[in-house]
Image (spheres, helix red, strand yellow):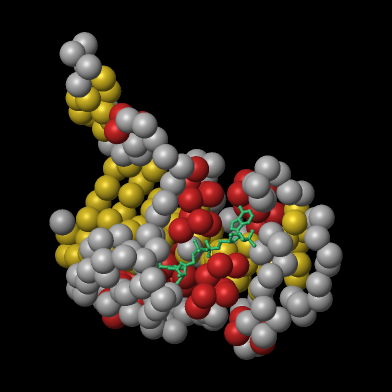
Length: 274
Ligand SMILES: NC(=O)c1ccc[n+]([C@@H]2O[C@H](COP(=O)([O-])OP(=O)(O)OC[C@H]3O[C@@H](n4cnc5c(N)ncnc54)[C@H](OP(=O)(O)O)[C@@H]3O)[C@@H](O)[C@H]2O)c1
């Protein structure tokens, strides 16, 4: 596990990477290597990135059974989330999160730019008085199915064809890319993240774990079931101690190892060369 303590110089460098695109920027010397390895893949421009992030308890919960989701993450976990927001073009949530938490999705815990805010609201149930629709902050883009009654929300509404149970995450990413939004944070909740992971569209997943046990309540990640552990996802994982929370940085584009069934019918761990 690496210890990541963000310095002002490192954060300035990461922000300039995000803002100046492909232009060559000098990397700070003798700076926090762990913070650079955690955040550089997000700040880097030139190819699309889909990052998902979950802030959860030790037992994998993101809220209580009554929906209290405040302060699951410690203060460093919150700063981490706000850094991720500041380094991407757009932050995406499902309408369930808007109804439950009424978030502003802005960057407040660290200096940085606010990303475009995207709400996946297939069936048009986003409350008209939602904070992000009325706070005058960063642009909001609402993604709906094209077979529902159009509503005026005072912000751009993109209408996509319904496909199966909802909207295809690839169609959502394509419509963001058409608007120049190619670096995307999928912030939650679990249903929204699951759709993107199940469609194999997430490049990296950050699981930020806070030392709290909630015991019951909604989970941070809940994917389509698999029968055998050999079918489970095994990304390459780097672990960072960021202070109040521990971040597991999972790289889905670099599978680490997989379980395969041996001749004796047992699951055996097979490591693939990175
Ligand atoms: N700790 C964290 O990191 C974190 C972050 C965010 C949220 N949360 C928590 O997560 C909970 C909410 O999560 P959730 O899983 O219930 O809801 P959610 O993921 O926020 O929203 C799910 C809803 O969004 C719509 N949706 C998302 N993707 C879609 C797609 N591809 N096609 C069609 N519709 C799509 C659907 O709306 P319809 O139902 O209208 O079809 C779906 O039911 C809250 O308790 C919140 O506090 C935690």
